[in-house]
Image (cartoon, helix red, strand yellow):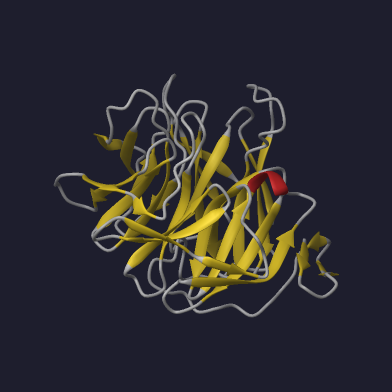
Length: 317
């Protein structure tokens, strides 16, 4: 792994695997991954997924297990981070997709349904599908990513200027939050909203859209551009992870993670460094466990066939 700073970059090798180490920030409200646990140096930093899995999302809870969705059939694959061994937890079905996903503390997985326009809730212990919410009736939606914040799971629709809030662990109505203010929706057929995390103060959500970061007010839907310093944009921004006031932006086709320092209100973000790794092959999303970020390689620039191989990789924080 290579970590690039405004000064010349430095590469550090640990145990034959390229890993760089920096101080670990304290986890904060709305962190989009695990807040406890320690990934030991002996644990693998690369593991296989089934051929043809077509991964895009990854989530990790307090236990050392990663859950990864499939764009091929909506399945869920679970990997033991201690060994790298995994199995299909939820088989899925033809015509379905599982894109972004988040694991709640009660063991429920909230899963974005992509072009199906759905949010699914799956029991992470049994793999059983518990609930499917039809979020939109639009003819061409793409429910892309999800974050757990306060009493709702918030989902992005990359083809519409709206966020959807699904009640967590209880019944209730889905809340549609139209996006306004400085939000710039892309033309029809082009993805807009993608990854999202809560702001450090917990009052809003940070959403990535077409190379920009926005701070969205959850009461009004008003979106304000976050001022970037040290970098012009977050081109190909996909999954987001926030640890305290440090924001990690996975920039998929650039094969890097940009690391930003947020101010307390998430009005500005200052580029601190970038992380690259020769094992990156269009990584899309990330999840934290202990002192590592785990990512899935979507390999968008490779053939997407039943024979295509896929991996998850880990880099040090």
